[in-house]
Image 1 (tube, rainbow, N blue to C red):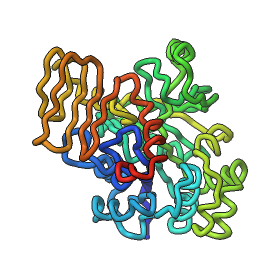
Image 2: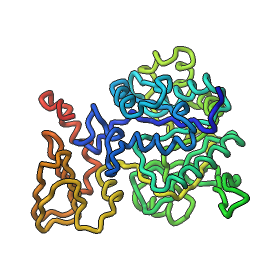
Image 3: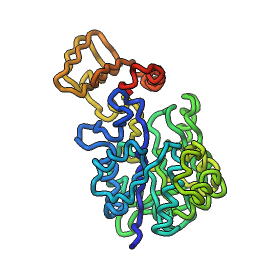
Image 4: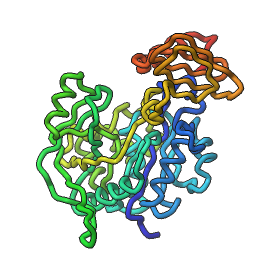
Length: 362
């Protein structure tokens, strides 16, 4: 079997709690259509990665056990052998380690692997594919663990930041066209979710990118680095396989590896991107010129800056004198929250989780 130029792995085990009540435990946000396309976020992610993968045989998905049937339903073209089912969620470091081991066993240590969250929105798919081609070229030529850095458009405090260091070269592009390719840099440091003043300082330097959570590397390079920096995750997987999974440390790949390795490179990119982290992302996605973003039958008076969503088109949301709120109606639940408090939805869910009579709402 030939090895594809890039083997994309989609991370699809997330809970999507900040999109509650639409996103539920049995059907989290990656399985929902939030952009009006009729395709779920998972399906859209897989479709745009097919260009680089070449065929469904090269597309992999890592997901939770209770979500595996949803993946099969939404991606029926993907081979069952490419579906990795986590017995228990342990964050992204174990997921990356396990899937990289499996791909290396099938395709060898020189296989170029990419990791992609299932819930991102990408505006320009041609630019996205060109960026991946450059990242794959860099990974093939160097012992590089490449992360895609998004050009920041405002001083966000909800994203991690990557500081670019020394320039390492230009990758991608075509000598026969004006396309200049993409500059790659060594990573100087990662910073997790800074305060606003620090984020403003980062933007002013022009040397920081948002951490997209997308990575490209040769399998053997990352396995070697995991042995050095995260042996407590890799070694048990090598020795015992997935059976050991529930006892692995719960760590993100950023914390377990990217903040420690000397092989981290960043490829700053500028295609339109959003991580669709909470309901405010729909506002950004729709970019409506109207007073409100209405994904529901809505009757409003003196209401502005509102996002209104109803899963049942026959239900009507009526508002009077509201500003900058999110109103979501789904099943038995109605959520009403100020836009600047959507990050706190997870705190409400903790209250619901503690009430045995409300478990059906999760």
